[in-house]
Length: 210
Ligand code: CDP
Image 1 (cartoon, rainbow, N blue to C red):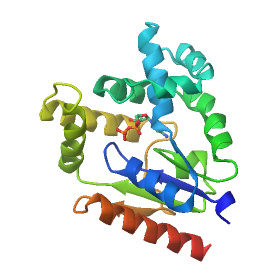
Image 2 (image 1 turned 45 degrees about the vertical axis):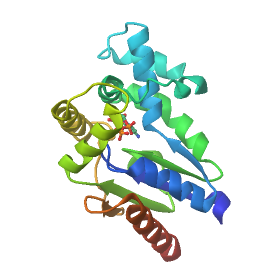
Image 3 (image 1 turned 180 degrees about the vertical axis):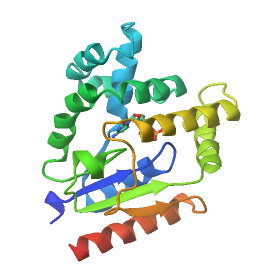
């Protein structure tokens, strides 16, 4: 069963979905793809090449040329790249360009995390979670991560996450949404260990019910 298992984990910025996805993948011995890194990779190339992020066709050409080595860049987690990623991710032609990449990765079983995995990329996934947490908790988590690398104020992180959440939820193509067929996991009051344990319980419940 494990070799054909696909698991979709969506949610807003700094909700804990990446850590949960990695640990679920390790539990089921599946590969894991952080799909945000694809959009972050495109954003980094857009910035390097001085392309206007609002030019959807030019950004889609960058997405078409994306190679795996870009995903190894160590500037992908910078706050500026996160914001630029959400701007380039709103173009339908960019999302289309990255779609096959993600589906190919999922073939044979995988855990993917992102914003539209359960709704658009893998609508038939065996298990789907939407991981969230209150905004101030998410901002504090992200501020702790970022301030280890760069000098950044908590307020800047909070504003940037709010803006990104709004952009991701309001875009017309593949908006971030908690879909009805997806279990909600609110990690506001949870430690990482508790969140992972609860995520595993929900995933196992969905797999058994299928
Ligand atoms: O780690 P964090 O949740 O902050 O962000 P991320 O998952 O790395 O995603 C960065 C940005 O890429 C998001 O704000 C979205 O705009 C975009 N994204 C998307 O549109 N669809 C996905 N499946 C994954 C990310």
